[in-house]
Every structure is written in structure tokens, then in C-alpha cells.
Image 1 (cartoon, rainbow, N blue to C red):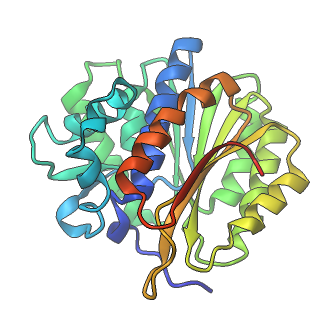
Image 2: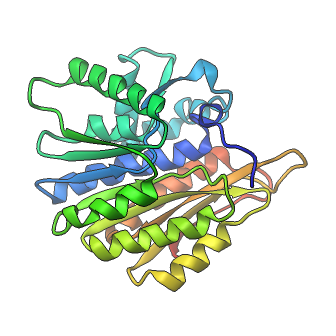
Length: 286
């Protein structure tokens, strides 16, 4: 077993910077292509977090927020959601997770499916999104939300058939507490892609000092026939006391024309976060 993951410690780190800037862009692009859109978040957590309790944000979102790159139009969907969650106040006081970002970007005709294993986190999420709805939506203008409490590897395959024929995005962001999580995630993604061939799937994964991401890539290549791309951002060669030295996103069944658009996001983030012996890559899964 790996060291237990504590989400609040990593809120707003470079992993969130990569995941959320890319996610906001993809949601915005998919909205232009589809009259109705589904968004599914398998590990939704609490929604919005106070950055005063998140020690990693200064070296992550804090660096991005103060950079010239933050003004790039590609980042506008992400930046605008962060500002709204802070009631347009700066400096930042809180940071939104992926369900809050998606909720603020989607339309009345869209639907969110949000899952969380911990009941307390799910209750916090419901309260958070209810407050956002009251602040930023007129009556009946917010997207519809479906909540699920439990292990996503159970509920996701059970309801994926309901989404057949409908376009949408699935984000999976597991904690990777067990070394077997990498293969389990691949099995779940394979089941979903078979039942929901129209779905576009996104998986966040870590690059730890002891990097096990190869287990994920091997399993995906063996199981999944749909086109797969990856985006890697490794910020440095591991130091003695390091744990997380980078992260990546695995994309399944997302149009290559849209994936090509996110290269400048990766380049900009790499210029901000990359240190000694870091590297980045976006392209077909290798």
C-alpha cells in the first residue's frame, strides 16, 4: 500500500493546474459541438476548498495565477470559474474542484453525474453546488445533478448503459492508494467505453518517485481498442524526500483535433512548473 492520500494537502497543486485547465477547455469545446452534454466525475469530493489549509497551492495554482500565461484565452474558461468561486475577489481565498468547475461551465440542458465514496464529502459537495446555484444561476438555468455515494468501480459500469447514444465527458481522478488501483481503473474504463462508445474519457494519474504509471499504460493498451492519448507533465527528477513529481492525463475517444489544441496549455504549464530534468509530452499513448 502507498502512503494514504490526503486530498486537502494537494488542492491547487501542479496536478490540479494541469487537470483543471485542460478540463475547462474540453468542456467549453464540447459545448460548441453538442446541444446537450453529460459530465461524469467519479471522485467528486467536496467541490470548493479553502486554500489556507492547502500547503501545495502556492507552488501550483499560486504560480500559475501570477504568471503572464494565466491571461491566455485558452485558460479563460478555467480562470473565470476560479474568479466566480472567489466572488471575483483577489487574492484567492478558495479553489474549486472539478465538479464546481464543470457545474459553472455547463448549461440548463446538460447533466452532471457526481460520485463520492465518503458520505461527509458528498454532503459538503451538495451544499457547495447549492450555494453556487443560488449565486450564479437564475431559476431552471442550472444543469441537472445526479449524486452517487459509493465505489465508482461499482456504480459507473452499472449506469453507463443509460448514457448510450449521448455525448459526454467522464473524469476519473482516483487516489491511487493501492498499487492495484492502476489495473482496476483500466478495467473500469474498458467496461465504460464498451457500454458508452460515444463517451470521451479522461483519467488523471500521478508520477510518484516510485512511478507505477506503466502499469496503467500496459493495462489500457491490452484492454481498450478506442484511440488513446496521453499528456505528461513531470516537473523534476525525484529528490530525496519527494513523492509526487508529476502527473498526467489519459484521454480515450477524444477527437484528435481537440487534443491538438491543448498542446499550448501543456507548453505554458511546463514553462511555469518544470524544474531540473523535467519533461512533458502530449500525443498517442506510448
